[in-house]
Length: 312
Image (cartoon, rainbow, N blue to C red; front, side, top):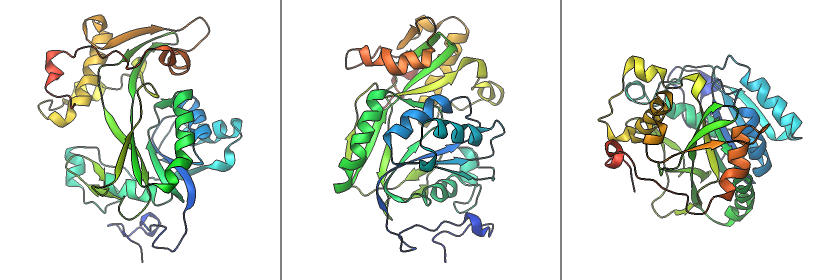
């Protein structure tokens, strides 16, 4: 019997945890991607991750841009094809917020079920949630390599700051250093660390006495493409910005609007970065620029509309 049967009765998408099935987890860290149409980002995202962890699990949720093929090609080029597993999850997953709230937690359309299904395929003692637009710096990759074995004798969760980078063109980008957002990414695998349904999205459980490790700034860049207009649906459908849980999304929207309207320099916390000739701005920021900045990274003051929304 599965641990979590899908509401729709789709046996291939039931959740069975390895410890229930009597499988012994191998030491190490598995990075889990849940992606849709991330082919553009993966050539930057995958190589440092493949250098840092023992295994990568990529779950493709209905991409139509060749995401899975790009992932396999990049892994092959990195000599890591044997450490990449690609799975398909063909069901439409409810969006965070009202859709998520209205979807039963065991439905294949639920964020909660989707996450549990993805992580039930991990076969190492630690797992890491990662997004298809997040680029590790070389320093970050080195720290994760060390953590992957140092964590084995502990039971800890690991949080890492990420810094949004809006790519204007190949040589220019705006880096947001003002928003301090510490989300846990690395967790032990076990029955105390599964996903449950929260108000707006899924939430990973963990015992209150678990140690929390916070990594330093400057290890991860979150890529946003100005030409993709990633916030077009915000302009069309509207967002309830009175909901303080959306403070991070509000900041991202304000940054995007400021860059588009030529007001980026007026918005506190943004730094314009120009790459040297022949170097892509993502490579420049992640491999060189961030590494050279003094720590802590400069935290400019936020505009008044955000001051009450940002968690300490």
